[in-house]
Amino acid sequence: MKVVVAVKQVPERDAVVRVAADGRGVDERDVAWTMNEPDAYALEEALQLKERAGAAGLGEGEVVVLCAGPARVQSTLREALAKGADRAVHVVTPEAGEGSLAGRDSLDVARLLADAVKAENADLVLTGLQSDDLGAGQTGVVMAELLGVPHATLVLQVELVDGGGDTPTIRVKRELEDGWMQQVEMPLPALLTIQSGGNRLRYATLMGIKRARQKEMREVQAVAAGRRVDEVVKVSIPARVKQTEMLTGSADEIAAKLVERLRFEVKVL
Amino acid sequence: MSRDVLVVLETKGAGWHRMSFEALAAGQKLAADLGAACSAAVVGEGAAIAPLAAELATKKLAAVFAVGDALLSQYAADGWVAALAQLIAETQPKYVVFPHTYQVRDFAPALATRMGEVLIGDVTAIQVADAQSEPVFVRQWMQGKLNAEYRHGDAGGVCFVSVQAGSFRADAVVDGASEVKTFAPTLEAGAIRTKPGEAFREATQTVDLSTAPVIVSVGRGIGEQENLKLVEDLAAALGGEIAASRPICDAGWLPMERQVGSSGQTVAPKLYLAVGISGAIQHLVGMKGAKTVIAINKDADAPIFEVADIGVVGDLFEIVPALTKAIRAQGTA
Image (cartoon, rainbow over all chains, first blue to last red; front, side):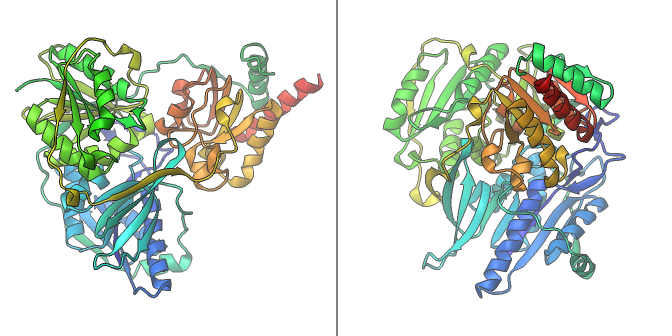
């Protein structure tokens, strides 16, 4: 089974986020980048699927990791290769401005990725359920529609089922709201967006990091940007809605102030 | 082209999803601000949605569309996309408003794509300067650290929007009278490619955080599993329950049943003490109802401080043990 995992490189969670000079984006200078966490879970699921299929004698299988962005995203692709992906495809976009990821809307970004996936003829396409930066949570579903394949979102587990027919089928466990779950079956090829927590994430081993250097990293030039359907007119730091009383001092001073509040205001002591 | 609004409501069991009327309130307000008409749609098996459509007819709406078909008796993205694409083609709204539920996240991006559009999702506010101008939709970026204002650029097409839980008030829905129109989409069983199973719960929940008066909740800032003891000691000193944000449960450091947030439990304690929790929106929706929120976090820009009554910017590894000690000293005083 061939699985393509689409991953995104996003600012680290602790990154200090500044508004860009034009007031319509994020200032990317001084930002440290990392693999979007839900995408790391998608990669983990893909690697485990391949390992399980291999153990069950269902053939070799291949995990291809895909990422769009400027040159910096190759560090994220290398990380995926070090964890066990077989090869990488880098859809190269400009750093900023026309044709960059920030310059494209969610439909156009999904189109970039879907075009690259098409060339792979994958059985399964996985991606995280949303990105930690823009949080649109749409890329996977839009890709499925563009690729003309069925999809499921918020998936925690994937298993191959033997339907007895010609079409291979998968059964997934997906998360509903309020702690409810659901099984969904669909024929392959299909696209799944993976929810975090279904697996434990693996670390890259030293051997994996070494091997990753030998693995293929193919660069594909991104197609020109389409016309944006929506536009971002302004980005700003949110105004505070609640008056938060900030306590300062040494740890012991803060503890004393908190105890005071807990006793006389919150009344839980 | 009209500037009319269509709100697509979501059902749950035999009734409504709790966010449906928040979306309806958002749609009614948008239509009023634009001087346009607002309609609503409910999708499902015909007989099942009839009483819900009748209920909608008591609201101030231009029309209520009961989108019914036997193939819509259970949710599947393919059925919903096909049915709603036909309704939209027929009724030609300019704005289509959804509640930002898990189900909407599953099908609305595909629906927008099929119509060459995008979904402006998880919107926290809609600003309309005047009836002539284009509305501005506010979404959060960077886990709530930034607000981004979006405008639908393509004047000709449909603008799809989903609204975040708690951003609009369900009790703001305006009553009135309208007519129920049944809409029968043309659907083919073979075009619904996924086979959905029934909803189930994994295990009975043994911890009910929803009634706990004191909750000490821990997030990524704790760093290592071994450090959890610090927070457990604090919870014990306060006589409270321990809870966590999703990443802690994902890592298996605490059981999933102790997770607070949109995919976990919703809590409303007297005190919610958030330790090392940045406050991603998925977490905040689960604890916004707390009477008092105290947050300890090293990042002064963390969104948790937006909802905290009392905030401490600092090192939890110094502050938490000091607080536990000070609370214990109270007991012996």
